[in-house]
Image (cartoon, rainbow, N blue to C red; front, side, top):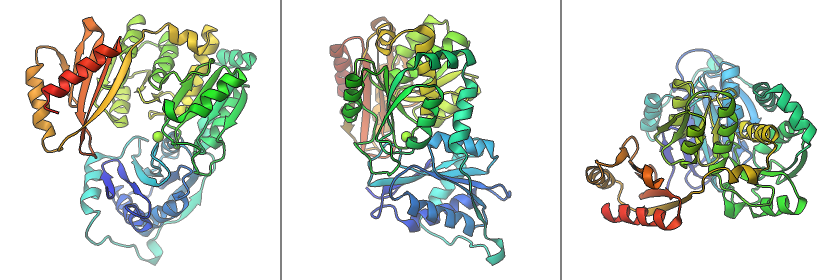
Length: 452
Ligand code: MG
């Protein structure tokens, strides 16, 4: 596939598409693109085995163009974003390939606001990545590196400060039994500390930040069999699963059933909307459970293009008390305006304590939908025409064209969303309806109309 260079950073298979030389060049370009102020740059990474080598290379590149570096070591992506804001850094570089398998790694750029880096300057990095000299600073002008080990502590404190104190006491008195699967990723270190503050009885599996992932890391049903079994066997109250950089969170109920990553943002929003007025921002592919929930509290849902930054920006621009993505990404701006599994864990525990209900009882109070995701091979050059054709065909329906095409049929409580991939020659169609048959049928119809 080769090295993937996008406006969020670079990603590839280590040793094949992504080397330390690439990481160093990227560090130099990023350091220059951050401008001429003397603010430090945050460096962080998940626990991948290749992380030490790549982090060293990125920091060398940053210092060679005169940037001071603050190395946070192995920390979560939301923790790194929090520290960029707290330390008023110029930006940050996080060495992570998120939920991708161990062979992969990447560098994610963060802007001074803790969100994604400015897209115009990111495009310039992309253009300059494959050719041209980059000016190396002279001996006296190179940057320095310092170490900061405060990330987990700061993150935990920020999450606890965002909680209701009475509810913290209530959670503590319930002494919930919690099974946590950190997949030997960056969540291993700080997350246990957070859960212990809630006086939960913690059973922590895959809890060494070795980067030797205990299972395929994406937190979806097929990869979380061990967690689900453990929760069932031990009679735990809840199971939590993180991805390697601990921004995403998936849930297992007290019966040991994986309930689906779509529920995380819905349950977290449930707790928040009970107490705070405001809209919820989610992307176009997130389950309509969130619409049902928002309606219950008399609130609106703002739909954005797919991409964490799009949701995060909408959360901030509309003063949303909560937002996120259906892939287990909870964005709780009271803590940090990016996907954060720590915030997700705290909000779910608060919801359990406040309602006195179990996860399965809470899930039973939500409407049932079936979501189906399909991929179709497609030449990406042809994708825009195919989408245009669909837009004219469906223009009388309730549609959104901010990212591909989403069509809603409110009377059927069903929708489909079609969008081309940014990186692979495929087009994705996601559909959701109260019954599987209808979701399948709507996807098949749309695919046929698109000539796929
Ligand atoms: Mg991730």
